[in-house]
Image (cartoon, rainbow over all chains, first blue to last red):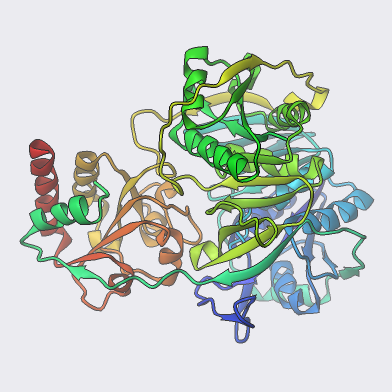
Length: 247
Length: 324
């Protein structure tokens, strides 16, 4: 059984976002990049567990990005995985990203594609679903547990107002969140091994984006905090009612 | 050309956020000089469907197949495509929630349509078809232009207040021919949480951090939440320590919420936490550390010991409710 894990490079969670060029772009100078936490902590680690338990034969990692994304994909390889693929493109939107990945995935034929529930930069959570559609595969989002037997996955997932257990046949795309696996720290052997693992650079197929970000905006600054005495909670409640109008 | 909107319901009761999506679709229809049509899937009474007219749709298409009572994203997408063809829809709206996120990107791919996930504004038609959404987990906003002919939008709940009108919608049954793969996922068991306010949909949220000192003190958070009719949440260290279940974790690597009121108790306000909650309309911070960064992001602050303040606040809310 072959697994493909989608890896997205995102700014470190402590990054303060700054804009440039008349707010048409994000100033990335000095930004530290990490593997998207949902991709790393849950999707990648679960794929590695499936390989360690002998269920998966191959674990491939894939990312879409220019050469500057290679340190992050090497970091992912340090956790594990047999090889990685970098689609050599600056993707404009999720549709383009999904098309690039789907076109590559079709050439190999994966049974299971794992990704995080969303990336913490653009927060769309749409690449996995689009990928499923392009691969004519089923999709399960917000997974909290993944078990595999033969060509079937049993997946626990969050649904509107609760939880559900599903059974699905391969091929399937599963988007992972907390519960699927426990985060790991790469060890020295992994880091050394990652240096020599194959990282194939693939030329992107033709795909046209269907959206474009025109500009950005920072959230409005708060007007300043109004302090209320801890001995006067009636006043706080009154303010929330008559001034803020939220209760 | 009708603007098409996917409506969700729980056991036949239309969700509030779906009325928001309907109203949003109806507003876009007005802006683009057309009508709005709602698509409802699964078992639901006509009397409930009629309520959709109040929020501005002229027509309701109902696919009554009981198999659609559970989320089958591919079947939902097939139904949306069928409805869009029937109505000639170029604009399709769903919610930015678990269901909408599983369906809208499929529909977008099928129609080669641009998708904006988590819209916070109506499209600005002067500059193309530009929709505002949060990026970097709320640390910034982006203005996304959809350049394709067909457009798909998932709307962030709690973005626009509901204003009921007096419109009436006609109800039409729609038959959809589903494909073999539309019900490929077999649902083995469903476990619905009942009784408590769901965090993602909550308008009021009370949240605790490390300053609560231990899980044994969470009764104070729950008492206040109960009195307000609020959901409870927590910061990452609290979830990691196992004081609270992981689904309560809000922040950049947990859930992102946008309630009307967020009360943060004993949470310092690290940038990762703020990212998940700064879409809240009003923030109250209770903390004993005057240097807590959260005070800078708050509308109201209370400086002091949470263990003493929480019971007083709960009491004050109780009193307020009695006199209202």
